[in-house]
Amino acid sequence: MKDIEDLIQKAVELQSNGLTTAQIADELNVSRETVIWLLTRSKKEEITPAPKDISVNWNSIGKSAKRLHDVSLALCDMVLETLEKTDAEVDVVVGIASNGIPLASMIAYELGADLAIYHRKGQDIVKAGHRGTISRNFGSVAGKNCVIVDDVITTGSTSMEVIEQLREMDAKPRVVVVLVDKKGVDTIYNVPIQSLVRIARLD
Image (cartoon, rainbow, N blue to C red; front, side, top):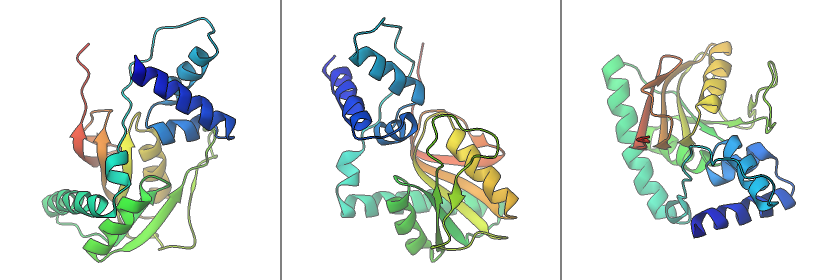
């Protein structure tokens, strides 16, 4: 129960610092529904059953540049394996802000590719036409083979958003690579998913 109480406390703290539900979900690596449940529980309101979700804390990797580098090498290996199957190359590595950026920059360096950054809109409710953007301060994706990097796939909505955006820019998303896949699918919009860890719930 201590882990739940810690999550509640972190969610409340992040909300008090002005973060939206979507930003809190990204920070805690849980779904938005889980964040709402945590915040509701903190106010001792009517308790609904907990959402079926798993919190991922990869702080022990994120606080160490060496560990991030070592993990990025493993992810690079998975990217190369996937690209070899389709006889494709990588031109640009797209890091999803903010947690995907450290890994994406290391992967881009190792693969000799450009680095692009995708900024999420940060809205709690993503409406049609209100998606994030590719930063103009980094590499261009137009017409290029892209590898998408994030830390965790929870529902897959962010990956879907990025894939759609890339395709609209005539880019070719070749693979999505993450530390942890909580959704447990092999592809999203026909783009292969590779993860170091895949979590499956048995209930």
